[in-house]
Amino acid sequence: MLTIYSSDHQLHRGVELKDGAITDSFENPQRAETVLAQVRAAGLGDVIAPKPFDRACYAGAHSRRYVDFLAGAWDEWRATGRTCQALPLVWPVRAMPAAATPPAFIDGKLGFYAMDAGAPINAGTWSAVSASANSALTGADLLSNGAPGARAAFALCRPPGHHAGREYMGGYCYLNNAAIAAQHAIARGAARVAVLDVDFHHGNGTQDIFYDRPDVLFVSIHGEPSVSYPYFSGYADERGTGAGEGFNLNLPLPKGTLWSTYGEALGRAATAIAAHAPDMLVVSLGVDTFEHDPISHFRLRSQDYLRIGEALARLNLPTLFVMEGGYMVDEIGINAVNVLLGFEGRA
Image 1 (spheres, rainbow, N blue to C red):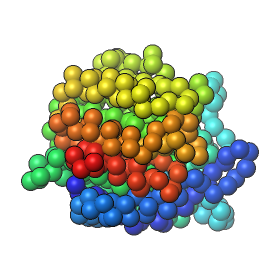
Image 2: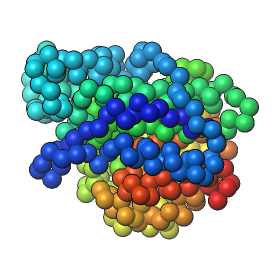
Image 3: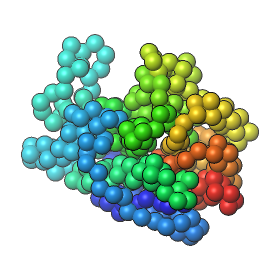
Image 4: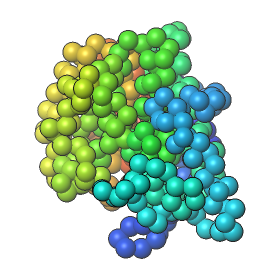
């Protein structure tokens, strides 16, 4: 299996507002480097660099004005004389009269285009997030082109993407890599695509992007949102809207979930995906479902990730794995690569 990786991810190292303090982010460059080391140690396959893509390729999953904001936010911030990382100060909460209008000043824009204070902007952010999206796009192209032996590819994306909605960043995410790849596959001729999110946290951004569409099925297995980030989406009754009704499947699970329960939910997800009959499956591969992850509360073990890969392989679909979360750095490489080895029958 080919892995697509860019060292440009190292240009972004963020901070976040957590537990009432500004601290270094759990989402850091060591995560991707640990996964890359395990890809090589396991002999998964060749590692290639992403192709360049014009940022117009991001403006299908996202709005053009949001992409333009991300590309220029650091320069706007620096023009005010500030050199620290940029975080939002105020958000357009319910019933504010101008909540639908982006402000002219960067401080207002940061709040308008953000869901939380966990997605800082710094000097390297745009280079890192565009390289991350390009990794997913490169993987989608490989599968769309039907390259010999290209049954699956792994986009080792960092920063992750699944919390980024059509017009907002948050949860360490800026560009929604999985959604961008799915949209790219549709643009290249796929009639239907399925996105399966196995990250512990609900993929609210991906749901937001495809919620009214029947061509992209979104399925998410995640922590019960009443007690788990992002709190305001991920409930089972969120089924899509308009033409997209019935094409959004949320499978929230309780604290302490073990493989026996998780495996049942994965079976339900696989049944829904098979019924959708997609031309491509995109997997938002988060491994923060691990029993020792510091910001999650499922209880999966390393061998369970092999089972996830085996279950996905049985769908017999061209499959793009897109790296999302996982913050127990010592095991993130083992667990992510175990999914890929299980998929390839190399458990």
